[in-house]
Each structure stands twice: as structure tokens, then as C-alpha cells.
Length: 637
Ligand code: 28G
Image (cartoon, rainbow, N blue to C red; front, top):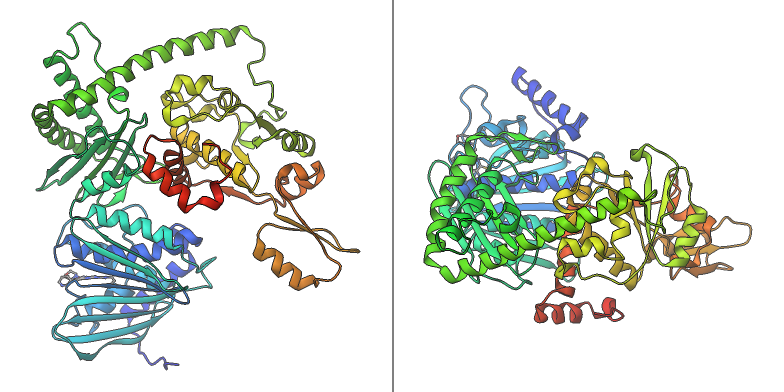
């Protein structure tokens, strides 16, 4: 153990108080102390390396999850400066790691620091929330190292060797007295770093997970930048323009855009400001949409694809089947919205719009075949929208004449305050019956699902609306779909998917998540969608209360605890095997049940699987089925 020998001056006492505040209220600095907050620690450190890359000095970042959930990040940048501050006598590097927000003011080299939302709080916050941190710097011909424990300096920066290289290496172990878990999810980190590599053309990010054999790894390096990004997003889709439309403007307000149309009906536009995903959009997205609508309409008119007398194509028609990524850099970004992921700077709209106008108009003139193919699709989207509007009006009129418009299969609840209400969407008749009997009818509604599986991939909204499986879901939720979806009208605060833990259950979950993702996205963004978790096993033993287990590990642990003799193990194959009381106890009672809130990432994954299973591209489907043969062998597709 290192002995703690340190004298404190007034300056350092302030430092300690600063980091103590971080430890007292970690949520204020990293959002939460859940797995999400834990992953934020890694992003904070890697963001510093990316800043060094944006400044033009770093080309390679190595991220390693070491056994024991130790994180190691290494870059080949200039290395954090090691010179001592003339007044405090403390090195610049130690200041970065011990003074709250020290990082925020720096990064002035590139001007566009990766910061905003929850990011950019800096290395000192990571240090404060780590059991230990070790920083090693190579620069000025030497190797320098310093060590910390829970934010306090254990060893100040000292030279430990010679080196002719430059760079920074940080290793840390998150503090388990602060975080609910220390277990990193490799896939979460991998996705994030793939995205960062797409957004920073030329930067290589290599991630490894050494916690278990065989090790996992990902190597991300894209010379194509955003072009590579949209090609990746569309990898399983049939493309209209094989090469993405690419727009790049450097300078004071850098703008980078890539666009590729597919034959699908959905719109997939991702936007970023200073490498932060602006999930709620904002002024940059507004500028993009305005330009897209104007340029395509102008082209269609001037080339007689649309006649003067025709109505203009609407934005949503032009965005059918689009996949696009927009990345802008803004010096002082204003983030608004519920999750602080909406860009507010009004000047950005015009900048994006004028950049797009020029480039896109030129592109269409130079690529008339692509322009025509896209416009044909827009025009048929416009016709379909018109037809859908008429169909909806018919439905509305019909509904207003009927006394009850709720689906017949729905067993509704009596509570009138929607925020207190829940609807369980249940696959299968017998499970639906048990759920109806087992529920608390005051606030729990049950909707059993019926009918043929619909291929959402190949269906326009009007067909979705009339589909016998999805229509009851739409009507029960009561807030419309697509552009008409109005989250304030939802009839239930929680929409809970309750399906078996088998192949068919996975199928229905995928279908519903894909459907919500494409037609009721705010429902997922707002956190209203949940997955019920029915138990896998029941353990019974004489003289003992039944024990329910939700995973294999849990069962093994419980068996070790109660002993294996005279235990009857029942494996639940489906919800239908549980009687109403058991279903209530294990899966529906708010006091005892486990609900998993669906995150946008889960829905994106479901959507991806769905595209592979239902789409037109045969090759990825075969590959997916081969790789997942044991899960999908019963699927009828
Ligand atoms: C490996 C994990 C995380 C970093 C640098 C490089 C510089 C730097 C970092 O400077 C302090 C304040 C304003 C200049 C900057 C080196 C300029 C010249 C840097 C990292 C000094 C911060 N030479 N690389 N910070 N500024 N990598 N990786 O943290 O005046 S942080």
C-alpha cells in the first residue's frame, strides 16, 4: 500500500472539495450510477483521445477491457502536458485529473470539443469515481506516471523512464461503492466506438475484451467517414443509389452529410453535433429536411417529372426509404429538449440548408438516373399517402358512429388516469386467459394478439393500420401511428409485451418492437415500452414456499442454497402453463415482477433482425439463419 504523504495548500483543499462533491452526487455529473453511468466513464476518457484526434495529433486509440473490469485507454496523441504550473507547482496533467471541469476549458486547439449533454465533464470526474486511476504519459523524451485513489493523488507525476514516442495511457477501475455494477457490456462499448470512428474519418479505434476466452475485439477505421456509416446502416437493404450522395464542407462551420436511398419505406436519419448523437434532432436536421424537400421539388419541376399543376411533393414523401447521417461541428452548441439532445442554435439551419442546396442540386444534375429513381419512389409515396388519408378518414367516420371503438379482444382496466394504466400485450389464447383472470383489473388491461404476422418491411402505413394483428394494438394504445402519432393521447403509461421465452415469443417481440420503432417511435423514446419477464423454473420442496427462477444461473444458485434432494423442478415452456395466480405472482404483480424497459437500442436491434428476416436481400438472411440456426429453426419465413 502506498503511504499517503501529501501536504495540502488552500488550492488543493478546494480540489478535494470539488471531487468530494462528485462522489456525493455522481448522478449530477454522469447521469446515473447504473450500468449507463458506468459506461459513461469510458466515453469520457475516450472523448479526450478523440479531441486530440480532432485537433490533428492522434490517429490511433486502443481501448481494452481487462480482466476484473479494469479499463485501459491508450492514444498516440501529444501526451497531456507534464510541465509544472509556476504558482501551484502542480503539473498540467495532475490538474486535468484533479480539478473539476478542468477539461472543459481545454481542447481549444480544435475548437470543437466533444462536449455537451452529459459528456465533456472531464477526466477528473472519472478519477473521482474510480477506486484507482493510473495515468502514463509519453512526451518530451520521457515516460511520466501518476496515481490516484478515489480522486486523491497517491503519487504525483514523476518521470519513470525514457521514450521517444508520445501519447497518453489511462487505466482505471470504477469504484464499486459508487456504481450498482462494474460489469461492462462489450457490445455497448463496441457500438459507441464504431460510431465514433465513422464520425472521425481516418481515426482508428481498436477495442478488445480480455475478460473471457475467447477474447472479443473490434477494429474500426473508416476512410469513407459518413459514407461508410450509411453503407453500414444499409448493409442488409436493397439500395437505390449504390454510392451514397456525399456532401462535405470544411471551414468555420464544418458540415458532413451522406445520403443513400433504399427500397424500404422507412426514414432513418441520424444527426450529430460535435460527435454527439442528437436524438431529438434540432436546427441542423431542420436545415437538412428543408433543403431536401426544396431541391427535389425544384428538380422534379424543372425536368417535367412533376407538372406545374401538380402539388409539391411533401417532405415525408421525399424521405421515404432514405438513410442519412448528418454531422456538424458547432463552436458553442446549445442543447435543448428533454434529454438535452436537440440542437438549438438557430444559425445552423441556414448553414446546413445552403450547403445542401448547392451540392445536392449539382449531384442530381450529374446523376439523372439516380434522381429519377428516387423521384419515382417519392411520387408513389405521395400517392400512397393520399390514399391512406382517405382510408383513415373513412375509418374515423365509421368509428364516430360506433359506441365502442376499442378492440373486442381487449380486456380494459377501470382506472381513468392513463399514466397509472398498463396494457399487457399477450401472445396466445391460453396465456391471455390466465392474464385476464390473474390481473388487477383496476389498472391492468390485457390484449391478446391474434392473426397473421404482417411483413412490416413491405407494407405502407395504410396496410399496417388495417392489419388484423396490429390494428387492435394501434386502437388500444389510442394515439395513432406514423406522423399522426400523438404521445399525449396514449391510453396506457406502460405498454408491456408478455411473450414466451421461446422462438415464437422472440418472433412476436421482434415484430412488436419493429412496429413500435417504425410507427410509434416516441413511445420507445419516452420509455413507455416494457418486456415482462416470466420465470423459467419453479422449484418446489415440501414445507417450503415455491421459488421462481428467471435464469439458469439463478436456479443453480438457489439449488445450491436449498439442497438438491427432494426438490421438484418445473420448467415453464410457456406462459400458458401458469395458472392465473402464478402469473400474477411471478410476472404481473408490480411488487414482485421484473420489467425490462425497452431502450431505443433494443428497438434498433429488433428492427435490424426484422429487416434481415423479412427483407428482399437473400444473402444476409441466409447468413443470419445459419448463424442463429438454433433460435430460428421453427420460424416459418
Ligand atoms: C488515453 C486516454 C485519454 C489527451 C492530450 C493532449 C494535450 C492535452 C490531452 O492538453 C491541457 C490546456 C491548454 C495546452 C495539448 C498536448 C496541447 C499540447 C495537449 C487523453 C494544454 C490539455 N500538447 N491528450 N490534453 N491543455 N489524451 N487520452 O486524455 O493548453 S488529453
